[in-house]
Length: 141
Image: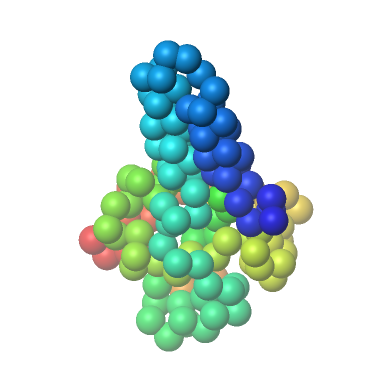
């Protein structure tokens, strides 16, 4: 279960504990709000819905959209996602922690490492940790 929740769940649990035990009450509530905000940023919910690598390849071949391989808790992935804004929904997103085939694709492109974000364009070109501006131009913004 910890694998599902990971750092966001731990931050939420810590926030609830601190809010319940810290005195004065306003200080505990302040910590709770801070930890909830941090948990939401690190949560997979901040990203578009993930699909499997096979689905992403199939859909990318059909519509020409790039595939973005990411994992929860990755600050570079979060930076890319936030900088893309609404344009992020124009790509297919694959969580490598929930899809072994996606992780294998990333290792193949990144020389054996699971370095994310990794973007694969419709023509098969793979780029590790691209700039948000580079990806935004490929998304046709």
